[in-house]
Length: 314
Image (cartoon, rainbow, N blue to C red; front, side, top):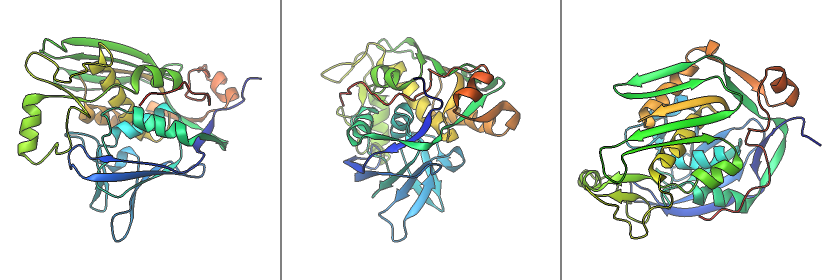
């Protein structure tokens, strides 16, 4: 029997892991706690005298220069994009995310360890339908030769192109029809990457203290420095899609629309999200019930809603 709705999800039990922050180098414990319907994803800094809660919403983005950073009342949580991508990819709507440090641990530089943690904890469907943000008209943003857009579609899809003047990377494109299985199989294991010359400069500035070949792809002028090479031939563009999924998840709801990204980064992704949110005529908020979606001519099977996941390798 086909489901009548795609309901909100949380975890079945508490789950945690430890790792280092990419930029701070600090060892951090991350704990995921189940939350009730309508709660959303909320980060909580537990290392402070008074814990501070920061909702994972675009309005709380305070920095996009090196990663996506959320902030409230002077308190920050950095490098949230890989965890947010995993939560979106696994269809998690409600969660309390506790951190005893200023940054989400980088783990292996991908979203796979977070997706595996979610899978190990189990996913519980809740008694309330998901709320979807349905794109109703085209919205685009430009920064020089970089461009990002969202246009109406029957489900969530991302088309991404990168173009680097580097012999290992060059031009790469990837198109993703979004869903649990597609995310786990095609995107979650793609790692962040950087150029050796930039890593050295960042470390001189006191940043990238936790960066290493264990949690990033590093390239010099002609080659990849990681002994084991790449996980995918086009791992670079796949990671850009991972970042975009994490950034777009800060709408606070699953998106129904087609995102096209050309040479984008966190700053342009968030510029696009802010532009959509600034004009209510660009979108509708729709409960994920079959009746409403089919009445609007939208797809139902393309949502992240199946509760049976393929095994993940972190």
